[in-house]
Structures are given as C-alpha cells and as structure tokens.
Image (tube, rainbow over all chains, first blue to last red; front, side):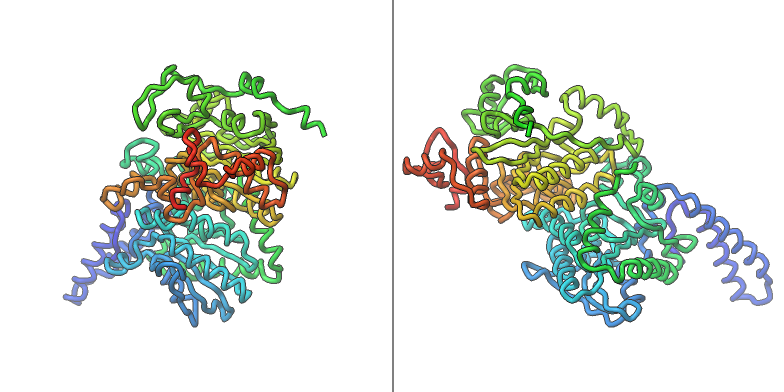
Length: 317
Length: 318
C-alpha cells in the first residue's frame, strides 16, 4: 500500500481494485480473476506513467516531499560502505538534521554530507524534519575541511525545506553558518558533487550545494523560497502555493534550462518512492560520472572551476 | 588617469542622482513619534537628531556622507537579463521594475563607487532598500561582484553597506544563485589580502545575511538595525512563541558575537578608516592624530562620553 498523493487518485482507485481482487483470489481459488487483474494492472501502470509524464510544479513539490521518498540515510545505506558518521560542530551541539561522515563509494574513500528528514514521527522529530540549525552547517564545514585535508572527494545530498527558523538558530548565527558553509564549498580543493534528492530549500540547500557538479532528481524541486512562504510574501495568501510553484520555476527541468544544474537524475515511473533502489542507483551513476569527470584535476583547478561555474550562472540567459 | 576628472561633485550628483522626495515634509521618528523636518534629517544623515534613531538612508546620500568632501565616482555596472522567469504575481515583474526605476532613479538596488575616506582610497558597495527592498537579484548580484572585482583590480579595500530583505523572489532560483556567486567574487578579494568591511544596516536579512554580508573581516552594525536570517514573522509562526525584546537587533547580535561593534552613522567613516589604516599599515590620518593629541583618541569610551557624538555602543561592553 502506498501513501497516495491527491492527484494520484485514479491510480489509487485502480490499485485498490487490484488489491480487492487479489484478496478474493486468495480466499477462493475457484474464482478466476487473473485476466481482470492483468487488465487493471496495465491500466494502472499506464495511468501512473501518464500522470508522472506531465506533473505540474505543485505536483512535483508533493512528490519531492512524499513521506516514502528515499532520504539521505537510505542513499547512504545503499551506496556507502564502511560509513562512519561524525557528530557535532565542536562549538555547541550535534545537529541530527545534518548527516556527515566518511565511508566508501565504489570502494573509494568519500565524505558524505546531507540533510535527513526522517521517516516516521520519532525520526522526523529527531532530525528536525531535515531543517538544520547553525550547528549542522558548522558540522558540514568541519567535515568538508577534513575531507580536503585527507584529499577525499565530497558528495552532498540535499533534502531540506530550508534552514531552521528559530530563536536559538538566529542567536547562534544561522546566517553566518550558512554563509561560511557556502564559502567553504567555494574554497574546497577536492571534488564536490551534489545531488538534490527531494527539496532544495533556499539558503539551507545552497549551503552544501555549491558544488562542481549539481544533479537533481527528476521530480525534485529547488527554490529560493518554499511555495507556501512565497505565496504568503508575494500574494499575502499561503493558499496560493501552487501558483508560486508554477511561477517560480522550481523543477529540475526548469533549472536544467537555466543552466543551474548539470543533469537530471531519472526517477522510476511513479516517483522515487515507488522504487527507491532504482532511484538511488540512478543517482549513484551520476555521482560516479561526476567524480570521474573531476578525477585527476588538481585542487586549484577544482576550486577555480567551481567558482567559475557559479559566476557564469545567468550570464547567458 | 582621468578618473580624478570624472569625480562627481556632490551637489551635481545630488541634482542628477536619485533624491528622496518625502511625501511629507515632516517625518515621524519611528521610535519617539516626534515630527522632524526632512531637511534636518537629511542634514543629519537621516539620523533623528533628538532620539538618535537611524532611519534608512538612500544609497547616494550614503556615498555623499561617507566619502571625503562627498566626492566619489560611480563604477559602471554590468547589464543582466531582464525577467528570465517571466514572472508575475499581482503585477508583472517587468512592470514592477519599471515603477521602482522611475521612483528611485536607480537601475537596480546596488551602487558601486570609488573614492577616499580620510584620504584612504577604497571601493564602496551600497545597497538601497528603496529599490524593491534592496533585494538581491541578478542585477544586484552582478553589481556586488563588480564591486569586489573593482576593489581587487585596484587593490583597494572594500566597504560594503548591506540593506536588504534578502533574495528577490521574482527571480526565483537565479536570485538564490547570487549567494554563491557573490561569495565566489569575495573569496578572490580575500585571497589577494585585501580587507573587506561590512556595515550592516537596517535591515539585513535572508540570502544577503547568509552570504557576503556575514563574511566580512569586520562586521559593523548601525544602531537598532535588524539583522538576521529568517524573518521575525516566520520564526513566530514556526515556534508559536513571542520573540524576545530586541531580537535580531544590532545590539543583540553584538552580544551574541555576530558583529564586532555597533557604530553611530556619523562615526562610521573614522571608525572604518582607522581600522583599515592599521590593517594596511598606513599612517594614521591627520584627523585621528589630532584626536589623539587632544587626549580624546578615538577610543570607544571617550566617544560615548561626549554628548553630541553618540559613540559606538560597543563601549557599553568595554
């Protein structure tokens, strides 16, 4: 059973019928419902494919936030061996919203940094729904600098609604922490590759996504402000989030067109949550390609290329 | 070198340049409610004379007040693509731009200028809140980058006055990209060993505070300025709590270690030029030598002591 999104209603109905028939089949083997199941499965597959072919930006926003969508820890579990997570910024606290540590990707040493949203009430609370505080960004800086010292490439996995807006976060310099993290990305002398897994929420995202290569999952979003907050600022009406999602151009396809991301990671039909393993593998193959393009470049070149990549954004529009 | 001849005379520039034309000749002090004649405010760099409240000041007024004898030369700024998102909310973004351009006589929210402060040549970048809340879009981003590039090419220190609500929503993700872009340009200045002074003015928030405005070699805030990442309303909605008094104000940031000092607008020039000259190992200015001779060296303490010159609030901690 999936958690269906409102626009997936037609698929939900069909898949509901299939489940019913399966139950009947299991209870009473004499009834032959095979054909009917096959027919419904084809219909529901087609319905899903056609829905996901033309998702609106607002629908993509919902998919990007889908509770079953694979998160940072799922990627780490599947792709990184010998993973050793590190904790703490060495100034104030540990921030569970930001995962950072070292391990192996394809057998090669790698540093992994990313926001984790959690996947049930308990873990969501623990990870603060993926919204990092200053400590999270300072931990990211710490691990990036360690990686540079040991000459180990860095991959960042971006999935956050944004940096956490709270009193303590402000007191301890949320803005400064993000700024430093961007600065550290720009000064890094090792390859830095970034994947936007779900939500790329504003400053909280760019803090770790100022990378040599930036990839984005097919139905991920990346935006200067969440559609809801944008609506309340621009229209003074938070219910107009879907209009903002449309107007702000937040999809992977839009960002590819603007030259802000390097490639789109294809998702399985029906979104990454329908087949997490294949989504994770698709992302891995882009990261692999990114690292191989960057391998052999010296630190100064990596740094210069990264800066020039960002400086050139928007100059050819 | 003909840039000296290109100097814009202050009076001339204020005739041509944008002017603050108050709707009302009398302006209310937001703190005390006192009505102040606009000419008196202008003459006092938009600081309310009696209360010391720092009002927002237009970019060109800032430059005029900051540079020696009000002399400066503006730096040409790059053109950028207009409205790549074809954005409209209640109004077309292009319409909105047009309105602000005619209202402010500025192309966008940032001005870059070169000139001297107490005889020290510097490059200054000023954000103007009057232009769409000083928001950081592609034009402002390119202007800030050009500022850093100019300082680097001319091997001068950079003094940046931030005033911005944050990224420009109407340019979406392209405005977010100004965070790494401006920071990339700044890093080149830093690597060249050139000092970078940030003057945080009211307000400095969002993407601006989360990039170049919080990466200064020194952070100087104007009294009472609101400086933070998230807006107070957003925080209140998130945590459903009242915010503490003075939250995100300059003095609050000083206490929390995010700024080095809170300095009265009138004291910005001597404060900045003095520190820059120490950093650059240049001789002290005649003025500051005179101050030292008078036994009233520009120590933070002595300034607070003198009644007509409200000194840096940093002295409270001294």
